[in-house]
Image 1 (cartoon, one colour):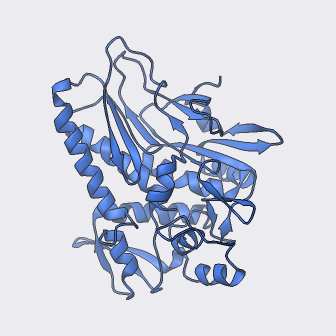
Image 2 (cartoon, rainbow, N blue to C red):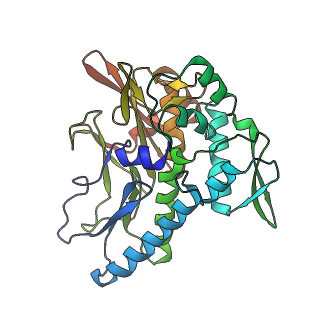
Length: 343
């Protein structure tokens, strides 16, 4: 599940335009591209003269993130770790150690459904830097790729002298694109705070986080998109209340192979793309990174297991499931406190 392939498709179906209440004084909006997707920052109460400097600071921050997480750039921190065939700990930044630590925790809580070592399978099915396969991968090829995966083979080491990643499987290939949008979104929020900005809505791809109020002195609002190719089809609207939100969906990023639709969401247990009826999982959490980690795991689990885990972990979750010619939705009790309406 790689940045250049997945994030470009906008698999996270969160609508920003039209979701904010129309203010008497317009917010300052900045936009750009990163990690194969787009970023957007809306600011209230910020002088337009700061636009150019903020644009540059934001792009520089996102370029640094891409330089860490990209599996498309051979010289990124993550690519160098993946290319390394030894078992000695490799130095990484505190932020990189944090994202891997969170991924390992969520992976454990989802029973391995959210697995950042699933990269060999992602590549096998054509959602990484490699080309899409001409035919469905064989059972032997899937088994060989699965043998190179497993969260138990990855370790984060943190000491007073720094942070390291260590693997005990030479072919282990870590893919952090499942959490990359949230990672970068949280960094934009941190950058805004460092700039003395307290009223903002920031997003990378579909991971979103807000703080404060919009230019009308009202809460920032975000819409969850219906699982359709039709633009601006709103499923529900939420007030983030200073939280992060992210959605994983199976209905946009796919391709046809041997007459079947192939989803970008890979089940680490089977080694194959998911084929159940859950089409969208939205999570609201204290950070965009946390939300971005949970949504993929829930998508892999499917509707019933995702419901059970959301209730057990007290997660704010909204699920959309295919039913016949239409869709049904389910939300956890925690999600209801954020809900504004359902058109």
